[in-house]
Length: 374
Ligand code: ADP
Image (cartoon, rainbow, N blue to C red):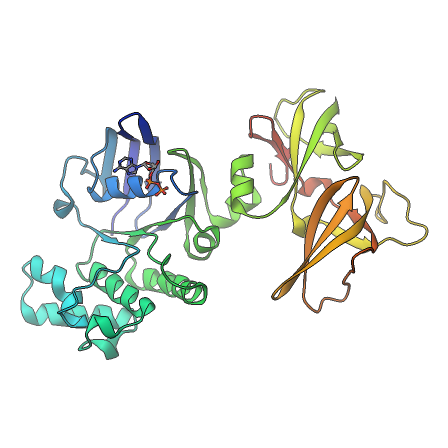
């Protein structure tokens, strides 16, 4: 295994800049996910790491050694693709041993190492099978074993699970994590699926427009998104427009499109009266209760901010139910587990409250200006 360093990495295709001066450090033995929407430059970055694409500018180091000018076969990397191109006329064992044969490893050692890798991916019982007999998930395990058999310093995975159905994909995410922990190789895994990145990664590097917008442990990125792009990309949330009405010692007071004012801590960010903000009310941070006769708008039982609204839609989504509440013409959603004590019906009057410290606020340019863990 080896560390990876990408510095000032750039790739242009004619007028299009696919990767735009990207810097990235991956530790020895780390599992890093490159996450981002389609077209943001993830695969191009991975291909430059593996030597399949030549950078327009910048450097690649593997294990501290410069490899930018080395062809793929001189870098000790191995790539797993989403289409598991196994050789159809070779057995599973021969497929896994193929790279070792190319490396000139003797037949006994080849077979021993290929069997070991089949064991790691739990496919020992299929050594003599023809790959065409295997299911999609089994083929992908064999492809993984084949890439790992040559003992690469870095394993590069380009959306390897995206051809699998949802259940199998989720199962393979956990297995991939276990395989990584067993072989202790550095993995760089490309995905556009935030759940996959959260399940797998030690670190997530979120890309936007050819650059890394944020990098950190999954929990860090989720708790402390640096921009509106990250907040929107990481999952469903309620985004509400607001305008700053005054600045205070702790932050700002903003007039929010929910028909009320809120106080927001803004940390060190410079925000002025009149600035427009986007405020994220994450569904899990909303406290929703049935409105009772003596509910007083503007404050909940704990004295925190609250608003009243009406349930307009109830959506069953398997194990959870999503409720939509209309508050001053805006629709907010929140979710509950099926079978939770309090559920609501369309037309119910409710009170929605929150802890201002849990809100995340973003400036008009998308930069985070406070709230949450800032
Ligand atoms: P991602 O993996 O995030 O979906 P890619 O790295 O595949 O993104 O592509 C980034 C951008 O570069 C896209 O706009 C894509 O169309 C473009 N691109 C990728 N490969 C080539 C190529 N060989 N020639 C021209 N444009 C390319």
